[in-house]
Image (cartoon, rainbow, N blue to C red; front, side, top):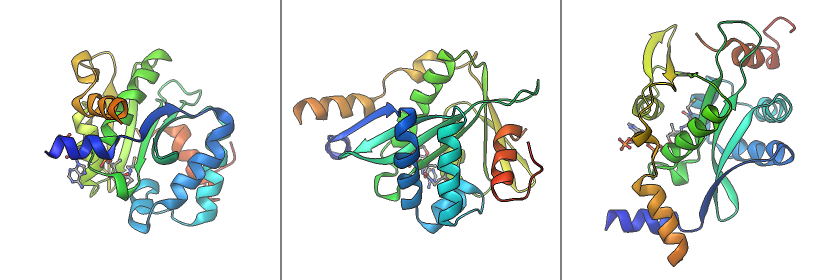
Length: 206
Ligand SMILES: CC(C)(COP(=O)(O)OP(=O)(O)OC[C@H]1O[C@@H](n2cnc3c(N)ncnc32)[C@H](O)[C@@H]1OP(=O)(O)O)[C@@H](O)C(=O)NCCC(=O)NCCS
């Protein structure tokens, strides 16, 4: 019964990578729809609209890959794959946002799998994720994909080793199967954090 309800809820849904032209409007509008608490969790305290607008512009411009979850044609969830900077110890940084109306239906997990597939295709060997220490949802999601999160400076930071990921974990899940069936029937990453700080006028110029 529970699975049927989720499958029905995902019936008009799809997941795909946004084109560069789509990134600015679709990512921006999705992020602007996040409520106050979600913005705090997603942006580590940066919450105003103008910040989000500049953030989406930056993503559309710097090679960030956005994988989007659509429901009835509207982006309700996004996974971000930020490219590493030029320094030798820099890692691609990842981030997730799912609007409250579609949470706890496996959307974050679907986006995570697609993101890992995309990251592997780009040849990345590991990924970095950073989230607030109190963010249980993101910690649960990251742990599910093998991130060993370490508490530091009020945040949890983890690395995901793509060379050790179990392929069975990345196989199509029951949620994705349900989605398809229902559709048929019906270190802190330096580059990423400097970008955030610069956008807020706190960092040194690049
Ligand atoms: C974190 C977030 C992306 C999770 O999205 P979601 O679509 O609800 O995730 P899923 O439904 O795929 O759940 C993934 C796992 O986390 C667990 N989980 C989800 N929300 C949880 C919560 N509030 N508390 C504890 N565990 C939670 C689920 O039980 C699931 O584990 P399971 O598959 O073993 O049952 C979403 O809550 C969100 O966008 N939060 C606000 C923005 C944010 O915090 N972003 C992170 C900064 S990078």
